Amino acid sequence: MEMISSMDLTPDQWPYGDTRVIVLSHTVKQAPENVRDHVEMYSGDLQALVSKLESEVYRHAYIDGGATIQAFINLQLIDEITITRAPVLLGEGIPLFGKTIKDIKLEQAQATAFANDFIQVKYTVNYQ
Image 1 (cartoon, helix red, strand yellow):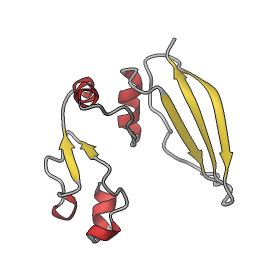
Image 2: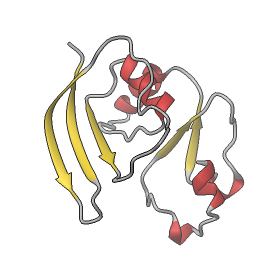
Image 3: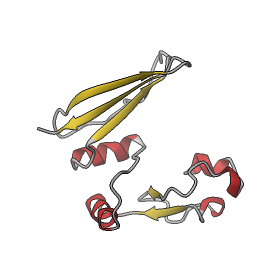
């Protein structure tokens, strides 16, 4: 949210169109003014949020951010995961995922290679 806010986009430049955007944060209570009309802030139980969205007939969500993804995985709330790899070797970096409660098997891989040498792999998540 902070990155998109720093771009100071006009309403016509908002990249998410009419897609509902919920920002999860325990520290930020109010969105920056320039994105306030586009995002909802949420701080609370993730299972309660998912249940609320399901009751509103939402069936898919895009989850981003390492700690956020880790929390959703540990609650077994992600059933499909897409990982995009950029063609860059980092000398150091931040782990893609943090500690999980147990090993999680990724299955049914579908890969797409792009002209810019990025590779995107979609998996089904198996918590068994």
